[in-house]
Length: 353
Ligand SMILES: NC(=O)c1ccc[n+]([C@@H]2O[C@H](COP(=O)([O-])OP(=O)(O)OC[C@H]3O[C@@H](n4cnc5c(N)ncnc54)[C@H](O)[C@@H]3O)[C@@H](O)[C@H]2O)c1
Image 1: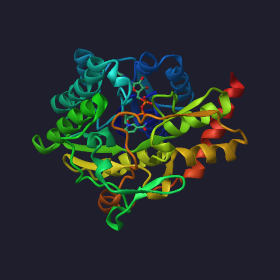
Image 2: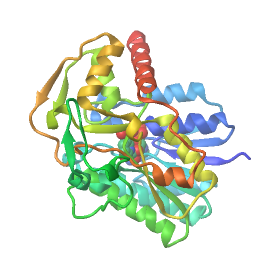
Image 3: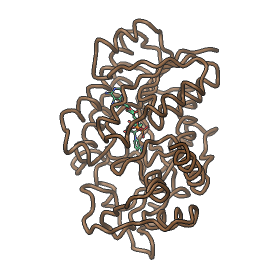
């Protein structure tokens, strides 16, 4: 059945992957993006190249240059289309950036999210709403899990932690960064629209979401920024924990497939951790090494002996809950496949320039 789908943050990494996926299936896709990533991060964060690519690659995609903070504009959009699915990816996505722009960060992440939830409740309450939240809602609570130091990474000590952090991790009384706090506010409000109003809302708490369509910058987009620096030049800074901090990485395609599974069998106000899991986990040191092998270039990097405030020492998403609710879903892109695709995309981009 042909559906009408709203994707916010449609020129970004996850939004653009969602647009392409649902457009390919013949649905009508409306994308909202005002290129605010450029405002946050400067020219390196500009997403217009991705918007131009999407326009070429799609059939039924319509772009709206709307700011999600603009409640009247959002309401007009919801009055003009009756959405079946809302995939909410627009955000100020950086931990560190939020420190410089606390009010804008909160307005985009928290107010923008409730604007969309309320428009959904008023105009299409039966629609499915998926909110891209973050593992930063746990603040630094995951750092309380005991870890051991190995040659190139930290890892959990206790066998019961092997599969990573699950959704029972607490989200308050921890250090979040302002970004984590604004996303936690949005995460709670989204849960409430599910639990209180009975709406079909799913909340995905992302680990490192990754893929070739990231407009990577130092403050956001870990793996693709390592690849970018390796191939396009510049220097990479590693902050604290000897570079042994661990991230789990999931390809944008697998995130979109998870959204699709949830939309087909939605629940009300359910929260899921969404990352690459243990198999797709890598430390910063290991990533630098692997990217060096794949590109044949030695990355120019330096160590800064101060960890980012609230940074996770070892974060692996436990995917057990999502897999048990949606057994058709699995990770389809391993780390090497992710990295090889990124290297290819970065090489293509450098050639175009
Ligand atoms: N990439 C990650 O590693 C990661 C990890 C955890 C959670 N997330 C979350 O997943 C979601 C998608 O992340 P992403 O990596 O695709 O981010 P992204 O920055 O690539 O995409 C977000 C898009 O939203 C747009 N945008 C920002 N403010 C807007 C506004 N006020 N109005 C309209 N558009 C606006 C930006 O221009 C950008 O294109 C975000 O909510 C992010 O917090 C991402």
